[in-house]
Image (cartoon, rainbow, N blue to C red; front, side, top):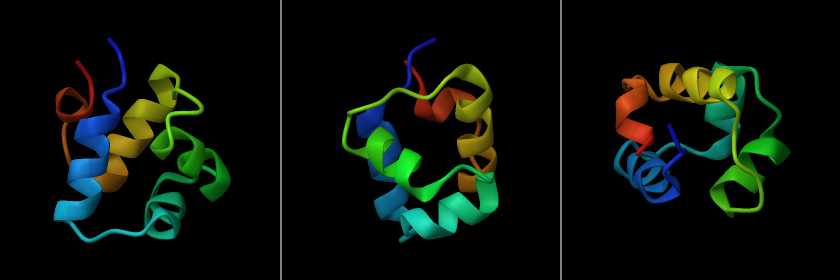
Length: 64
């Protein structure tokens, strides 16, 4: 299961969410989420779950 950056960014744009919003909902540092969004870091499985929950989507929607 690999994090899909393209899908993640698309959902952020569709839902008009800012990284700070996702950070608050997921309890993941905003700087870390920024690194995910910029492709500098890949989230572990636990954080993928937190991101999906914060985005109100299933894990399948942000992974390959």
